[in-house]
Image (cartoon, rainbow, N blue to C red; front, side, top):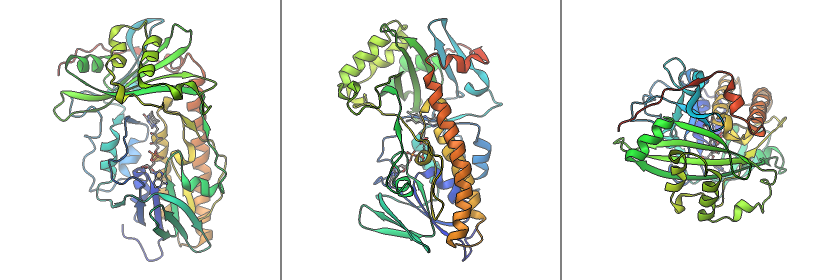
Length: 403
Ligand SMILES: Cc1cc2nc3c(=O)[nH]c(=O)nc-3n(C[C@H](O)[C@H](O)[C@H](O)COP(=O)(O)OP(=O)(O)OC[C@H]3O[C@@H](n4cnc5c(N)ncnc54)[C@H](O)[C@@H]3O)c2cc1C
């Protein structure tokens, strides 16, 4: 679709997920703070589900096939998310409809770099453009970058993540985000040979164990495959050990001063009663791959935003904990609905744009807030995901995997 002379010019700050709103025929530019496409480590895969038909339909016809997005590529294994309950038995369980791709419900657990590359097909991105300030007036909006340059357009979309500069502009400098009461220790690691085959058999894509540590605390141990090497012989993994922790929002929380070795020892103590094949991920983790200081999880719950020439999407608007795997899905939903709003704008006047973005924001914030609260609740109950899966728990087939 070719932009018409009256179409607004849209500035998109941040995420390539916003390409689904830039694929609509409007004129747009994308700015990204990273110096290059791969400057940011993107250590965890992202599960896309429930949105895939709409998402792919919104992509232009010249996109490459999406079958290589899956983190399992080039292995011929389907998505599978298993869970284990040491209080019952260590058999492989799942909630079949959602947690194993059996040909009926498509789930793509995508490696982030592959997803980013795919989304950026034929799209020019201006790297090294970190937004630091936004100025909005009746006729235009201007975003200023750290390198001293600026860009001016009719609309600015902040897809700039949890610490969004664009959100701060909309909230007039009074930011609104909360650290969650969750501590989370995490590491990446590379596996090959028998170790890799064993982890794939435990859950092709990922698995979760809810365990009670010797200290009585319930921990959630999550292991996820990030990507497989092109020859299929090795793969990058990551794990998280998370627990409910009232003090986690404190800046001086004790986990922030742990060394990598102390993090590994803590995790191994918590998991001491798990069978060897579960503990071995933590044992294999190299100290330099353990995240120090640990990740801090953030939830953003916004009721409303002022309507004008500036809006936001994704984590900038409704960051949420990752335990229901909803964050990227909602960022895509936002981008798709914003894309629709942008294509139907009759002119670039402030009132037209404010009406359209105001309607988009109302629906987007209500939906995102709901998902953020559900994601938070999913952790508030220590017995989850047991209850989450309790609806239709099925035994998943035990696999023997040969590489
Ligand atoms: C451990 C973990 C696991 C997760 N797993 C899942 C999952 O399985 N499924 C799921 O749906 N979600 C998952 N999520 C959530 C998901 O990662 C986010 O919801 C999603 O990445 C949000 O996308 P976004 O585009 O809004 O923000 P981001 O992915 O954070 O992208 C923001 C972009 O903006 C750029 N940027 C930031 N500031 C500026 C600036 N000032 N100027 C210019 N550019 C800027 C950044 O460099 C980045 O490229 C997970 C999150 C975590 C932490």
